[in-house]
Image 1 (spheres, one colour):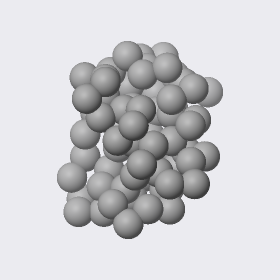
Image 2 (cartoon, one colour):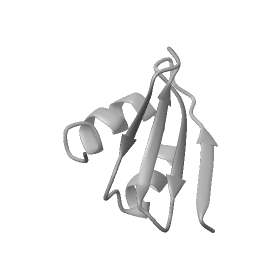
Image 3 (cartoon, one colour):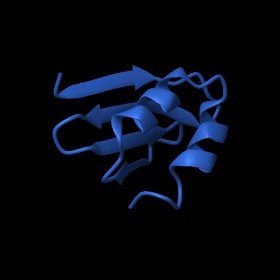
Image 4 (cartoon, rainbow, N blue to C red):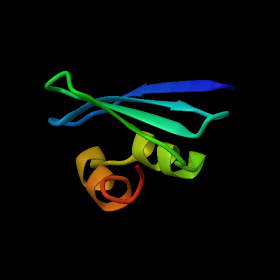
Length: 67
């Protein structure tokens, strides 16, 4: 699997895409804005994809940690 994608059940986050080969996570917000984060382990993407509260997971585990 090279590219994974999931819709997120969140009022702020719409979807996330992850590239296994480059370890790049793309997060799209409900506003339409997208951000890319590099060097993200697959476990972080899977945690976001399976989080009960994706917005909280994003703020605690991705934002400000990955560039």
